[in-house]
Image (cartoon, rainbow, N blue to C red; front, side, top):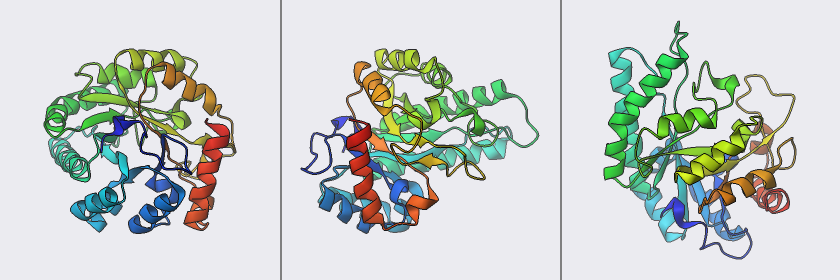
Length: 287
């Protein structure tokens, strides 16, 4: 089940190439999500490690395979910025486990949230170099298992605690140290929509065969406390999704568009209803 398949198996209902990230409708259990995808003709799902581990890697693989679903990505690996030997070793071990899980459920894309600054550390450049060192160890391991590491830049508001990689250009600077088949990048509208250099970086990523995943969520203000759960439903905020979809299409991205929204109001609703609305919002605002 390759993320490069491009959604060619989409059933009538959901548009071709549409993928739902599991976190968007986290109120649905994994079996409920698979059932709802079947009802709506959704052919792609992005999964998260915690529910996959809870259900079982092999059981998850059987469930999605029997339903004819493509697993477009697994979230997440990363958090590779630890400066102490024990923290570094633990992060590498956890990422090897994540790679094994990705291979086990049949996806070729492991999304990396690379990590913020360690406590008391103010060296952004040093932290990024530690990410590069870790990628050097992990990329060959992933390649042997048919998995590509996908570096995701996060909005600068997350630089201190979640990801010192804040722009698509920074993500590409890391990824391009390694073969394109081993390390790519995630183009996520929520994180890069504000950056006037991002369009040229999308083209750069496409030219190098580096676009491993394309994710969409809207930017809505005011942001909630803690900001993490501020991703908006498509069409509720400020992002021109057609613009970004055109950019990644022109860049040659052959794959899926994965809707990944963290939003408590969406999670409070009936999961099937929220999924159906997301499909319709995608049709109205992305296509």
